[in-house]
Every structure is written in C-alpha cells, then in structure tokens.
Length: 221
Length: 126
Ligand SMILES: Nc1nc2c(ncn2[C@@H]2O[C@H](COP(=O)(O)OP(=O)(O)OP(=O)(O)O)[C@@H](O)[C@H]2O)c(=O)[nH]1
Ligand SMILES: [Mg+2]
Ligand SMILES: [Zn+2]
Image 1 (spheres, each protein chain N blue to C red):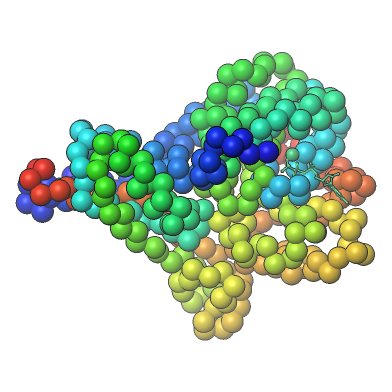
Image 2 (cartoon, rainbow over the protein chains, first blue to last red; image 1 turned 180 degrees about the vertical axis):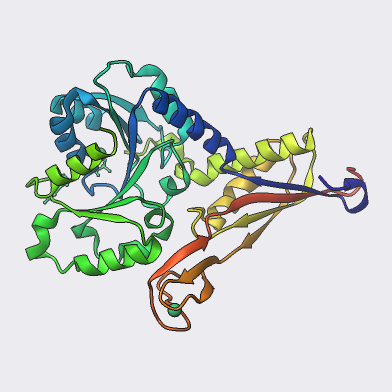
C-alpha cells in the first residue's frame, strides 16, 4: 500500500475473482478428499447439456451425482433423477452463472458419502459469457456447442472457448440439414486453445456418447 | 421466465462483481469513505462487459458508502504467441490472425485479468 497522504492514491492490486477462487479451492479440496472427479458443463441455452447428462446418468448410474444450475425451476434436476442419478438443483434466482460459493452450498446438502460415488457433473446456467470467469472447483471444464448455433460462435465467445479442456460439438444428427462446418469450429477452438480435446456427438441418437463417457471415466478409474 | 420485480439488471454477473469490488476496496482501506476514482484492469478474456460493470459499480459504490467515484477502466489486449512462427502479438479481436505469417495456430499468454488496481481518495479525506 502506498503513502496515501501524499498523492491520495491507494494501491490495491487485487483480483476481483479472488473470493470466488478461494471457494473454488475449497470445493476442489473437499471433492478431491472424497475422490470425486468433477465436471463443469457450459453452453448456451438449449445446446443439450441436460440431454448429455441424461445419457451419462444412464451410463454411470449411482456412480455419478449432478448439480443443476438454472435461473428458476427444478425441471432439469427431475430429468436427471428420472435417468437414475442423485441431482441437486441450484436456482440462481436471476444470476446468469453459477459461482463457487453456490456450489459449495449445494455440496453441503448433497450426499457425497456413498462409496460408489466417483463423478460429479455440474450443469451451469445456459450462457456463453458469464460462467466463463468462475472456477467452480472442477477438474474438467467442458464447453458444448450445438450445430443450430452456427460454426462461427467459438471466436465470438473466446473467454469460454479458451478456458475449456473439452469441446463437445452436439446435435451432429442435424448435419444434413445445416451448413455448420465442423472442421472450422474445431480449428477455431484450437486457435484459442491448442490442447483442447474434441468430441462430436449426438445426445439424441447417442452417436459418440459412449466413447465420451468412457473418456470421462478414464480420468478417475 | 423473468419475475417482473427483478428488473432485468439483476441478471448481470457484473452486479455481484461490483459488490466484490466494494468488499475488496473496503477491506484495503479499512473504512468506507467517498472516493474520487477507482482504477480497474479488464482483459478481453475475463468475460466482463466494461459497460455493465460501470453501470453496476456506480449503483453499488453509492449504496455501500463510497460516494460517486469515476470508474477508470484500463482495457488490456490479450497476448498471444504464434505456434507457426513464434511471433508474439496482442489483440482484442480473436478473428485476427498472426500479423507476421497469418496463422491462427497460437497459444494465449494472457488476457483473463480483472483487478482492482488502486483507488483515489477525495481531497481532505486522507
Ligand atoms: N436433434 C438433436 N436435438 C438435441 C440433441 N441434444 C439435445 N437436443 C434437444 O435440444 C433441446 C434442448 O436440450 P437440453 O438438453 O434441454 O438443453 P440444455 O443445454 O440443458 O438447455 P438449458 O438447460 O435450458 O440451457 C431439447 O429439445 C433436446 O431434445 C441432439 O443431439 N440432437
Ligand atoms: Mg438444461
Ligand atoms: Zn505467425
């Protein structure tokens, strides 16, 4: 801190995300201590996050738990429970993203003790910008882009697509009907993020989904 | 469905970040006093809209007892390194390719920053 009696200016030099990052570190420790591997799924509204998680719920069963973030409604959590997993709904009451504090609170309500529990998937609020700056304490950040959104979205939303570990291009069953250039999307994502892993899937027809689940599983077994 | 009493602007994450800013400033100063200026740095990969932040911070600073400071935003550019020719360059627009060789194969070195850098106190408030 500088001498504020001379120039009346006080240096602060503090990251605004530091509070969130502290909660994220707590979450990472809590989940790591329980050997639970955590995913953060981010996409625009309707790209297919819940449909992907329904497939995963059938694949992993009680080995997986899900946190659902939505502005208002328990609908997605009910879909996951029907598919066979424990699900906790965070209703953000207007906020456009989940933060690590809200996830920390949810973790306090969930049953994380069953010995078969190995995987936690967090469905973020549908939004391509706001969730990108919030570390939730995940081990893997997954960005979903679906074909109807267009192949030019990656470079328009660089804060998200530069921060993901895995890009899932969903709804590839629609390829015959749309002019989405899958190679272009992949190349542009690599230009923000040379290490990104890419899966092209259809959560609806299940194409590529089992391969994706096996890849996720390899990270914790 | 948007409840009518939420007024739309509660949907910005910049609102909760404006609260975090006043918390950071309050604990650095140890007190709440009217401020002249608040200097922040925002990178193009931070996910922050400078205009939304300005709007939210103006409201929150007043409510939290920091007066009506000017928010001075230092908007940085991202630093990148070209993986084809090793040139380092800066940009805000990720459609822009390497100025030396035109490649978009690159690694991002910085651009996610969002910091409160300093505050300036009103005259007579030292
Ligand atoms: N054709 C096609 N439709 C799909 C696919 N995956 C999901 N959908 C459909 O897309 C719509 C939205 O899917 P959701 O899984 O609810 O999307 P979401 O990302 O969870 O949406 P929000 O939670 O509202 O942000 C539903 O009608 C799904 O049936 C797919 O692979 N192909
Ligand atoms: Mg959903
Ligand atoms: Zn180059």
